[in-house]
Length: 128
Length: 128
Image (cartoon, rainbow over the protein chains, first blue to last red):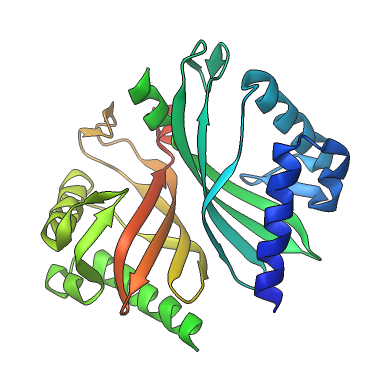
């Protein structure tokens, strides 16, 4: 049951991102969240996401694969978007690109406390 | 029980890679395996791994995080190695580098049939 529960929470989290419903972000993200080992806190996490949507106005998180156990979620996310200007140090300048992210989340008390993300930046470079 | 079982199979698979025990690879990898959506077959998978060990003689797969459900394994792998020459199009030339891979595997009949891998190549570039 617990496993299904994290899947459900994760779907709600992704909907929160896609709706840019930042006031609800604290429902899913712990105050002391770490992103790729760095303590960035909930405020830093929100600022990162707000920055992502500024750089990519049509950003949308699509779950391709979702796996969970009692304390973790792993997912493969797909992006199909048109970033303005530069992204990850590359000049995208409004070109439509598709790329993937494999990401693992650790949960504690139903909130995300740690995120380990790898974005396929090489795939973006190959499309430019 | 099934979930624990895939974790155990995965640990044996990683040991097989670290031992370069290629004759056992077919115990873990399906004949019609796909790697990042491309059908490469068991022979192609073996050739890819043999090429990895040629490029990186001290290659070692270390599991940092392991998550599984009935049909999938997700893991975060860590690498700490000294590739010869070029790796992923970058001139590494024997420098010691550390990087991560977030990878998801789909299993069928206890064998890996599909792999979705994202390697943190940007982390390597930042170390050169």
